Amino acid sequence: MVTYPGAQQYVPDTRDLAELAAASAGCRGCDLYREAERTVFGGGGHEARMMLVGEQPGNEEDLAGEPFVGPAGHLLDKALERADVDRGTVYVTNAVKHFRFDRSANGRRRIHKKPTGAQVSACRPWLEAELDAVRPEVVVCLGATAAQSLLGKDFKLTQHRGEVLRLPGELREGCDPAVVVTVHPSAVLRAKSQRDDMFRSFVQDLARAATL
Ligand code: SF4
Image (cartoon, rainbow, N blue to C red; front, side, top):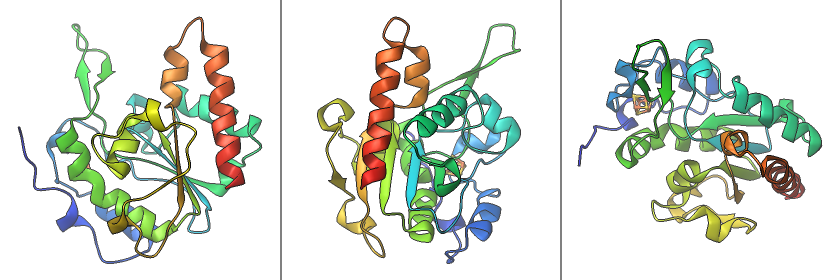
């Protein structure tokens, strides 16, 4: 298995989100910085009470430099609105801060590729720093990659969806948020015949998280 130096050496000792974001631009903790356009750090304020964690930036996020601005982000916006959660009050980020992709045969399209476990581990220090900076009351893991980054690599989303969980001990310094897991909005987009049902369940998960 490939091993990486990891992001820890690039993470400054600060709780200032702007400083963290600026430092993340120079991260070389794994190989993903080589092909992607830029680091996509989280967005939102220190005062956010809910943190949403996705997998990694997509094509549009990589171009824009902001998380959840592509099709999955639009669906997330709609779901948050239905769940009566103001996106302005949440902090959104990803388990991995660079876009991993394959090129299409003609080289024109960049096609999402799931990050490896080693890349997720390498990037975790940034997520830990964001948790420490924001200290949210509730964390929503959007999909298995986010859940496995925070709750362990063997975590099974399908077994624990709907439960109120806690972070492992080493991540609880300074904050002890409730953690819930749900699907990634891109999974709702990919669903065909069941898309409406999946969207409704997704909204319910977000609404329930907001009550925590
Ligand atoms: S994916 Fe994470 S660890 Fe890898 S280079 Fe980017 S910011 Fe650093």
